[in-house]
Image 1: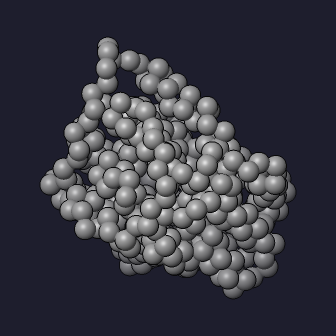
Image 2 (image 1 turned 180 degrees about the vertical axis):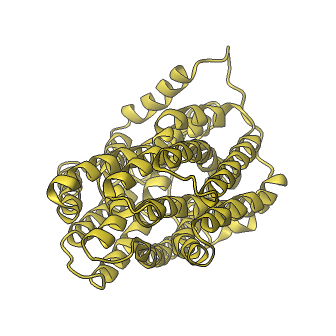
Image 3 (image 1 turned 90 degrees about the vertical axis):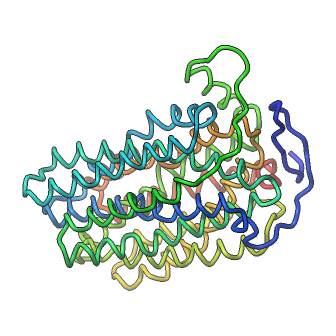
Length: 425
C-alpha cells in the first residue's frame, strides 16, 4: 500500500488522499469532540484504575496470590471476547449516544454494588469474580462505540490529532487513575476506591447528555446477523495485507506484553521485590507520563509518513523494556524502564489506532473497531491467565521476560520480511 491514506465514502468505497498537516489540538475546537473527550477522560481513568483496584484487593485485601489475581483479571476482561463484536455492530446501526449512556450507567451500578459488597465484609473470591464479569461486560461494550465516533465527529482532517488527544486522555488516566484510587483506598478502605470509580463514571455522564453525533448511514437491505456483519469487517482486514499484519501484531501484544506490564507487573512488585502491590501505582503513573509526552509529540506533528514503521519500532522498544523488567532485582530499577515503555507506548497507541481508522470506511468503522477492541482488551485477560499459570511454575520475572521475548521476535520478523506495514500511512 502506498503512503496515501484511505478515506471512507458514504457508499462504502474508498479514495486515496495524500497525508495532510493537522493543526495541533484542532479537534478540541469541535464542541462534540470536546464533550466526548471529557467523558473519555473519566471513562479511561475508571477503566485503567479498575484492573489495579481489583488486583490490589485480591493481593492485599484478600491476601491471595498472583494466580487468583489472574483469575479476577481474566473475569474482568473475558466479557470483551463475547461482547465487543456485538457492540461494534450496534455502533454501526444504533444511536451511539444512547449506547454510551446505557453502558456507562450499568458500569456505575456494578461499581456501586462492588463497593457495598466489600463494605459488608462478604467479599470472597467467588463474589469478586462475579463482580469482575459484570464490570467487564458493561465497560467493554462502550469501547468500540467510542472509537467509531471519533472519525465520524472530527472528519479526516483532524483524525490523527483527535487520536493523539484521546491517547493523552488515556495516558492521563494511567497517571491519575491508579494513584488516586490508591490514595482514596488507603484513606477510606478498598470499598472507598470502588466508590471513587463509581462517582467518576456516574458524574461524567453529564458530558454525554448534550453530545450530538452525525447522522448514521442506514444499512441497505434487511437487517443482518452480527455474524454476517462481523464477517464483512474481518474480510476488510484480511484482504488488506498491511492491516492483516497489524492485527497480528496487536494480537501478539495483547497476549504477551500488555498483560505482562498491565497485570503481571503488579504481582512481580509484591512477590519478587517484596513491596506492597499498591506500590505498582507510581510505576503506572510514570508510564503514563511517558505516554503523554510521546502523544503530545504526535499531536504536534500531525499526520506522519510511514506510521506503520513507527508502530513496529514502538512495539520493539516496549517488548525490550518488558524483557528487562522481568530481570530487575530492585523496585528502583523499574522506574527508567517503565518511563521508556511509556514513551514507546504513546507511539504504539497513536499509530495503531490511526492506521486502522484512516484505512477503514466509516460504514465499517464500528465493526472494525470491535475487532480492534477484541484483540487489545479481550486477549489481555487470556494472556494474563496463561502468564499467571506459567509464573507459578517458572517464576513471575522469567514469565514476563519470556512473553516479551516472544513478542519481540514476532515484530522483528514482520519488520524485516515485509515492507507493506512499514510504509502504511
